[in-house]
Amino acid sequence: MIATVCASPSAAQTTGTGTEVAAPEQTVDVTPKASDEGISQRIENIFEATGWFREPRVEVQEGVAFLNGTAENSDHRQWARDLAAKTDGVVAVVNNIAVEQPISWSFEPAQAELQRVAEQIIAAMPLVALAIFILPLAWILARLIAKVMRWLLVNRIDSPFLKDVIAWAVAFPVFLLGVYLVLQVAGLTQLALSIVGGAGVVGIVIGFAFRDIAENFLASLLLSIRRPFRRGDWIRVGDKEGIVQSMNTRSTVLISIEGNHIQIPNATVFKATIENFTAASKRRGDFLIGIGYDASVAETQDVLMGLLSEHEAIFADPAPLVLVDELGASTVNIRVYYWFDGMQYSFLKLKSALLRQSKRALTDAGISMPDEAREVIFPEGIPIMPPSGSSPDKPGKAIQPSISESGAQAEPKYSASEVDLANESEDLQQQISPEVEEGEEDLLGEPDRA
Image (cartoon, rainbow, N blue to C red):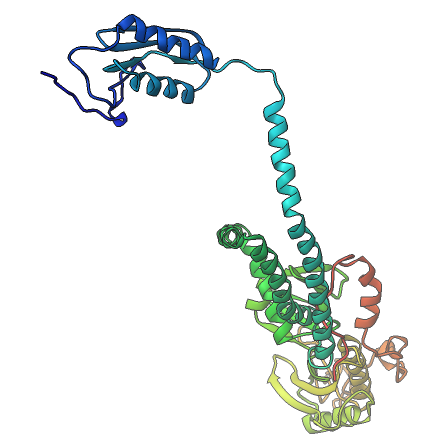
């Protein structure tokens, strides 16, 4: 009677100690055809012939082959097990062969890797040449398109910053198309999408980290679109007032009348109330003059209106106004309103000139301008009682208020400071501009208004 046991190579198992046990593929005879010694000798001879094993030893007991020795890699170990399992008379295999890779000082693996890299570089040379050709061409084409867009917008948009943004918004997709073509030819489209996605996440993180910088940049873009002021305008932003010197991507620069350098973040400028005093050429000024209660208000108005109508810096249309503002403790306060060209004349110089000339005209007309705190006017004079012993028939003389010598002195029609009433903003800019924001690009347009 012959009993057979069927097994397959997949039935090989590895024990916890690393010993591999495998059953043979052929059937197992009850009466073995070959002796255990012959089987072991045959397998050992084959192992030695290959030269793949060190100190190979094979022991066979009742058809079970025990393999011992050392192999250089796992493939040789697997080959030894398969060989023993297919040998006639072997019913099972216990693979005790250890894998020990010998220490090699050979540079052959490094040379092989270098050779492989060199082959890859040679294979990629056509793609590199294509990238070297396409990317510069795409960049030059994008710059050409941006230049054409600036030329088309030169008479439509005054702000150089806004022109650059629009020009590059149209031209930059051309360069991106060149990059896409290079990546598509190189087969790196998926990598490009991954990089773009990662760049988007990084952009969000950077946006939160540099929120103020991004906010000021967007504010500068919106200010360039709205253009509430130009360089040389006199504006007030919140509690800051001065001449607009320049605007960059971070801040707007003002020069105060004292010559101080004021930087206001663009986000603050965009959110704040902007008062532009030179947006229109016509500007209104006013000043207050107090006259005595004994003086004629109508006569005072006529005198001041005549002065304003003759002044070369005052507009006849809109006409000036001379109105009673309030009744003070000892004076009737007259407020004078007038219009002038704010781009040509200085507000401070013109007001000073009008106040001085108004004081002169009222003095010449005999209109009193008493001090509210110290001066008391007696229109009929002060009656003086005669001294004792004098004749009561001789009435006392009223003492008339006298005019001081300084007040009686005649003033010239124009003082030395009123010779030039020109606006001083241009002189102030010329003195300060070399020291302000040197090296920064000015995002404002031309200062001259239409």
